[in-house]
Length: 121
Image: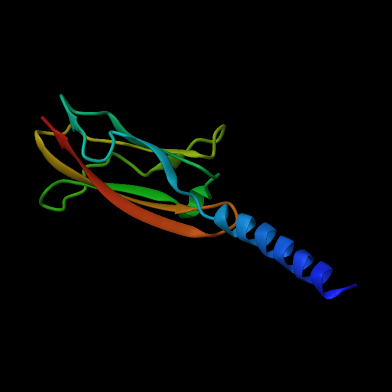
């Protein structure tokens, strides 16, 4: 093999490896309520869709009020028929600002996390 062919093969291998690495983490594609949203009335759930399937045992959503008290009603669940969808039921919410903290562990074990807030009017 000549040097140019070897370099092309190495570059192609790096591109493939980089593409696989980029898809190894689950990131949100849709949140309900969404970040910064003001909703009228208490939502029944917080739901997040991700771009990759989730490992239910290690993925979670926590929702807290302005004082840091949990307002969820049970644990977050990953939908068995759509492993990219996770939601958690909420207790009735009063007007105020609520924080959502999520942890997503992709099926390959890579972990991502994030947080955002929404307001109940």
